[in-house]
Image 1: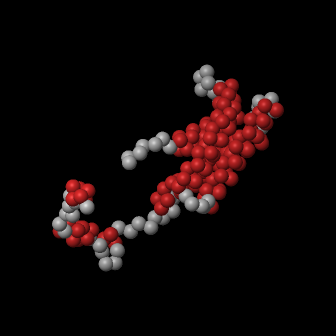
Image 2: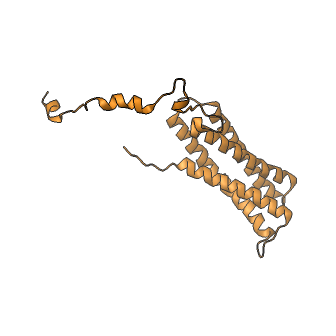
Image 3: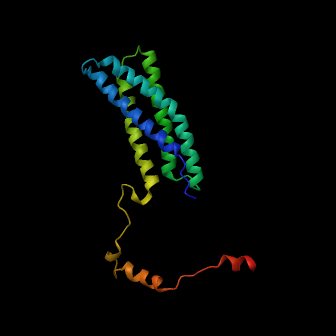
Length: 181
């Protein structure tokens, strides 16, 4: 009753989203050679690598907790769940590819690395859209099915509906009588 459990999957997902966006921004700033005071290309290169390592380290527990949450709440795998699993594996593959390319290629960003990093941002945005669609259900980005009561034909006045129930006498239970029976 009133259980307030920690939702580990949500916390991990937000970390992966943040790190992926950090990688995308760092790549663009590194490629542009942007400098803000003492903050320059060396920091952007470091942030790109660190964020890719973070994505790889957090992806496995994120996928596992997502599958566990899905299994505890849904009977079968909806197409949205399958799409999220495939996109998650694509994210892991692209992040691993970026790290390998950075290690093998001497650490400088290339066209392939840029395409993979920007693709990861697109993959994360798609994962977020599917996650919102699953989590919020009818409150997703599609038009909702909600119609206000007064817009129905004929209109429904909720006060009239409640008035009949409010007029009834309360049903009292005497616990001592139940135990004796």
